[in-house]
Length: 468
Image (cartoon, rainbow, N blue to C red):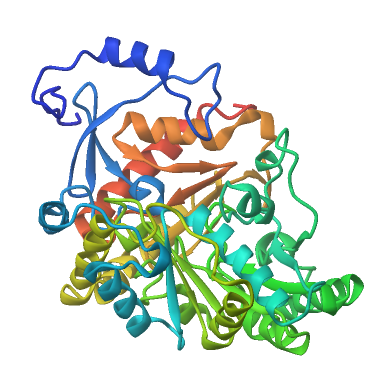
């Protein structure tokens, strides 16, 4: 049985789950939710890698919220950093040369630990805002260089880069475009690097990588290299199914980008700051970005903050454009908010002092090993993939010695997620791929619970197969 806690809200008063449910349904417009049919699940408390719902039930948060609560749900040092900053300087903007010590220190620290040399840091409040900011910077950059046609940006099919106007246009998921009049013109997509599904028969990973690079080259030539500004990629695709790039992929892709003078944007919103077993996913997969975007684990998601790092070449053009028009006219009221910056700075200190990268390599290695030993052989599992502390388990129907996808209307991923929830484990259903991306502080004991519970949920699903 799952353990329970007292059902108290933040003020210490007893909460009424029924009233919470009714109030949510009557007042909240939820993101990424089936609005007419959803059933709210209210979480009221967190402790370590565990969270508690309105009924006091405990769950292992196997996706760290949204791939993001890297230090779990009760890191007191982050609370204290926020409180101290609130008492000293609760707010200051960074417009028109205004600044503050925590923002300056955070920018310096990010430049120090960047995977490749970077020149400046721009702060925003979410990954989506950071991606939109990078798009505007790229347009500004090319205009400043007199290349007014070089504006198109290429992403991959099924990639997720955010939900604002530009970031959603880069996102390669149809459901993020429907009824929103997206994507905007000038946003293009190419094949995602999933060898398991898209490789030709007998095609090695290296051969597959070369073919995808050739497809990208062909697309750029077709569009006109003088019109293509940038290529954006997650080191490891997250929402697109946890796709680890095949051998040689980014080496081949970057060769094409350099040939056509196309910038590389690393979307490190999920992969950055330890998730893949290096400080940056770029280091794991061999990316050398011109622009790097980080969020989520930057503050362990205790407060909203994101950052865009640009190299010297990009910054020089931004500066010259600023001289031309008078200033760089982009920013948000809360860009580099001092409280968020203080929490992020403390978060980076914890990563370094606790050697979170070494911890992820050890426990993440155990997670990946156990997934392949215990979960991959299950008759409902077509593929297990991942690296470090991020993994995907794809459900497929076995036909003899081969597999095929379940019909989409069977919604097997959502059903398995529900079975896992019954047993105290939260996973992320992305179609029929279950995402696993727990807090980086997870222990081997926590991994054992995750694996055992996932196997139990898979066994329970066997009786729900359409032909069972």
